[in-house]
Image 1: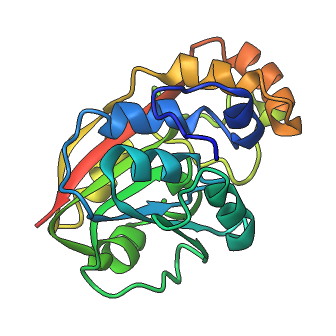
Image 2: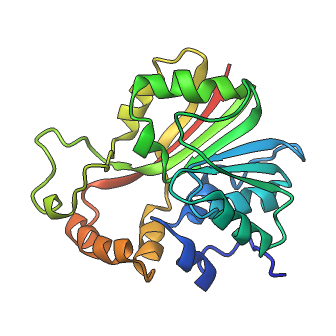
Length: 235
């Protein structure tokens, strides 16, 4: 069996399984310096094809629940088996609004490249995410965002690429939204440093969405986008 190397961010395997800006760079910047107890339960929410799940399981010797709506559990299970990680990662096909977990079940929740698709409202954090995190548990979110909010609509040069499901916002926007939930304390909400590398990795992938994004990133030219990183603790 092959070994999944948490220090290798770009390989043929990762390029075949990226679904956006390189999630391995993002998750490493978010949690790479963290120290967790062996055997903790981690929820990887919106795991895509499981790259971040494999990273988390290997780096922290944790049990990871890999949840995604777009990628089936069986597909991810086969991928985890190919790296002998099937006993440490539990693949689940579920909607983020219908998570099948007990209250206070997880020590850590991680979500990379997905949270902005389903949680841009006050209710999500309070109703769906906070309850399943243990008290004193940690939450780490990494997602695409903006340097400044678009106050006059999407800039003209980005309009041809803008899709209805794009929900990019600034760090300040997310801070304000999360501040409405008193039982979740933001430790840090800031732009991640890996944004340009993460996007550059994605644009080299042989993926129709990546090829489409080449034009968008050329038009963006470093003027608008950010990579938002949130680190928080449940009271």
